[in-house]
Amino acid sequence: MSAPEASTFRRLGVVPGRDFDLRVAESVSDLSPDDTRTSVDALVDAQLLDLVLGERFRFHDLIRIFAHERFRADESETGRQSAARGLVAGYASRVRSAGDTLSHGQPATGNEISAAPGRQVTSGVVTEAATWMAAEHRNLTAAARLAREVGPSPTLDLVLPLLPALLLTSGHAAEIDELAQLAESAAEQLNRSADVTTAQIYRAQAARRRGRARIAVPLLGQAAGQALASQDFRSAGQALRVLCEVHRENADTDRAAESAVHAIDAFTRAGDPAAAAGLLLELAILLKDRRRLDEAAGLIEVAIEQRERYATGDAPSHRSLAWAHENYGAILKRLGRLDDALREHGISSRLFREVGQAQGLAYSARNLGDLARLQQRHDDAMRLYRESLVLFREIGDARGQAQATASMALAAAHLRDWPTVVATAWRWAAGPVPIRDKIATLQRYATLSREQSRGDSPAPGAVPLPPDVERYLATLSIAGPR
Image (cartoon, rainbow, N blue to C red; front, side):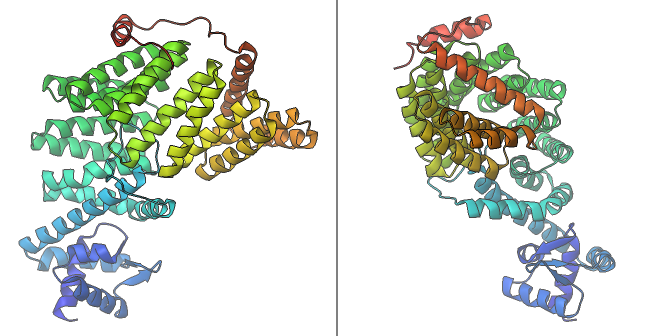
């Protein structure tokens, strides 16, 4: 074995995963990329490495143990540090790129990775990034553990972009919690309070993924309190935004509204009006849930105006604006303003299409189908419901599929297409959809029926929110929908 091949063999012993690709080999090697490739090919020819899945390489278990022993025994301290740092830095760069790509295919949330302005990402590129994350998933987690030996700064460089990428894919809650604790410890060593808050938010997200709101809520409260105490208003706003989402998921509208108002204040003090506008949208949805539709419509208009004013031109900004128009259309529909609702859903559909956001397109098509049905355009309604069903299947949304299928049965009944009514109704009833999603579908159509019979009359029984929320709403002087 030549000296370059022996060096490559030893340094590959630092790779913690079972298999790896050529870029990982290049990141740990002290050779040029071309020489590294030559050495890897030689190791494959010598049957010290196996070529698997076309582009990946794997040690036999005993050979991997031997390579690691030689790495520890024969590589200098400087060489060991160089290989480990190269591995962590290489993974960190690729995780940032994959996370940026994956964030383009998700709904706008408080946990997105910022995207490059104007970057166009196709569904194929998003799939490629998700495939890479799946292939490297265990290696990345192991590399994050290895990063502790390299130092706190490299640990944060890898783990902070890895956490949102795992949330966007199939990362396990226990794994996310472990990595968030690694990041929190590293940030505390470096006295980086904003990163401590970020790590605590992801620990709460892990608890949220497990359905443990009792753990998530105090973690987020602690993170927000520490950030406010150090006047890190942006981090406080991020923690409060997630806290609002957790309270909403647990049907605690009062606390969700209070968290939203405090988050708006924090983002405003941080000089981030775009983020504050996103919380205005959240607050508008809470008002809608409290049957205060005129106020919700006025508030969402303010949110849209601010979103348009502070839009950055990137995909997350466009997606957030699209969801604002989508929710505005839903509120206008409940107010009986069908033509205005049609306009808003048309705008949201166009924006979702521009950024390739399949989930938004599915909901937009379904809502446009509802409007067509309410306007007695049943052929158009059937076409739009079919389109939404295809999209919901593509993204694996079981509740959306149940609603689209039931909608098709309803539209077919208006068209007196009884064979389609029977077929779709049976498919909905017998389909592999959880019973809670079927119940949600029936509740939705009961609401639609009430809306159709009510016409332009206002929603009854508006419910108040906590006093500090009411005071904040009073300062906005909301005039209602245009």
